[in-house]
Structures are given as C-alpha cells and as structure tokens.
Image: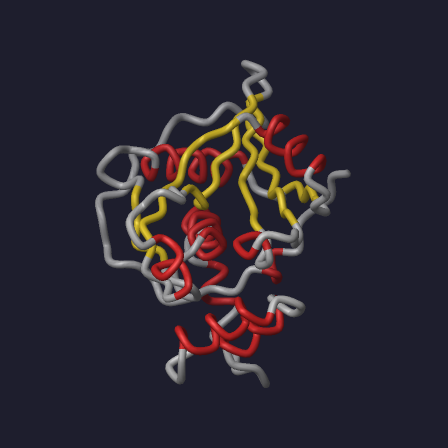
Length: 205
C-alpha cells in the first residue's frame, strides 16, 4: 500500500543548533523515491509509542535502503531508568526496508507505507541529509522522551529537505493532554510501567 503522505501528521519543533550540512548531490530526474514507513503499537513498552523509518528506492540502481533513528542497546548501563526519564543514548542507521517491514509484520504491528510527494531535488536533499547524519560524528544523539526522538528526528530530516516548510506550516499547538498523560495512556493495561512513567517524568512533562 502506497499513497501520498499527509505531511500535516508531522508537526515541527524548534530548529536544531546549526551544524555543517551535507553537500548537495547532482540529481537525476525521478531517480529517487522516498516512502515513510509508519509502525503502529505493539506489546513491549518501548513499542507502545510506535516507530517509523524512511525508505529510499533508487530507480537507477535498484538499491533499497531504510533509515531510522530508534537504535539503542538494552545492555547500556541503567537503560531502563534512563529510558523512562528520557536520558538514553540513541543512534540512527540504515537497514534493509523489506526485512524491517517483514520483521515488524510478523511481530503483529500495523504498518503504513506513505510515498512522499517530493521533487527530485528534495528527495536527493533528504538522502544527502540522512547520509550526513550517519557519519560517526553525527550518528549518536541524547534521546529525549518528547522533544528529540525517532519521530522528531525523522520529521526534522524531512523539514530540512523542504527548506523549513513544515516548521512554517505547523507551529506549536497546545492540546488538552500533557505529555505525561499521553504516555500513561499509551501504556494502559500495565500499571507498574504507568506508575514508573508517571513518577519518573513528573510535573515538567
């Protein structure tokens, strides 16, 4: 299933600290397509909040590669506490999109494929950006439970390729629920995890 993505699903936060950006790559017309892969909820606590990836298909070479910003290590010191409090070292990286989709499908997660309606220069700019992000100096980041995670990083990569169009189109919007209440809602049915999130995140959330 492929369809044009409704980019309105991605809201934009404040711009990140300026860093050296990737040099543009010459574009062959219609040579590159980009698909947003959205994974729904699953049973593990770290799967309750969904996940996503960007799938790049090069029509000239036939190459398929997906990038996502949700890589972490369970064996990192204090992982559970740091995960609950949003102080976890995450990274991004490439993977085989078909293998990723099949793995998550077998795990029972709902999956949506949304073809991004990007121009050839925008698609190439997005690929250049994720390749730059993959460099050793850029690949790791301090995960923040709400403000800097696998969804906001992907959103900001798309926004970069659009010249900041998402940021201009979708400013911050207040909602009726706090970050903390949304997190507790998404862990419904697991009281110990709900309590841990509620206490660990506290009033600032």
